[in-house]
Figure: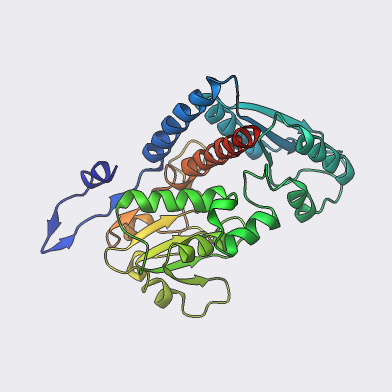
Length: 313
């Protein structure tokens, strides 16, 4: 895969890199899905099929799109996936009842609750997330899995899909993480916080920046590896970056664009046109981290099924 990345490098002028190498999430996710399909095919030889349930509350259009991509990926890999949709009138108790039912179903190996929850009733998201069995929590969002990750127990937990996808993209560059200075911008429970833990337990020196960080450009400028998940369009500028750094952009933002039929376009949290003149490697938006998030969800589901199958022996 490293060779696939290298051939995209443009020529250098005056000993300086003229443009960053693009780390393609589309290409990498395809490789992951192909590997997973082979592993699933092996399980099917013993009449065993990995199974995933996606639980949705309400009918948000953006959630429907995300779920559609997950169902498509599951079908490609060979995972049996079921989309369970509860009405937006569902109460917290009803949602919990459905989760408990799936937890107890031994034929299901992965359960994700699509966020945000779209209900007319108040629902405690933390309570719902933690109700999912840690053994089926393939999103890696429960406090049990988060706690194991924070303590470095990486082989005995489910790692959240977006940070795990980011690590896979970093690996594809051939740049080692150990001993590097990594900077994470953002501290969300889904991306920033677990990203910090993953980099730390892969032996990087990690700085986490957030809304209260006073010297953000200075901190970013120290990063050999930069992961941005702040949710603010094009907030990181190219002149902030360390020359030759690895830049992973987790942002998905919509900005006005009159040239587009929709009147808007998707951009990341990094200003791509300036950043790709300074970085060594960079992920595009779209087509970078997004496809990897779905691929890692499939990987976690396959891992869960393999653990279940091993315990049957």
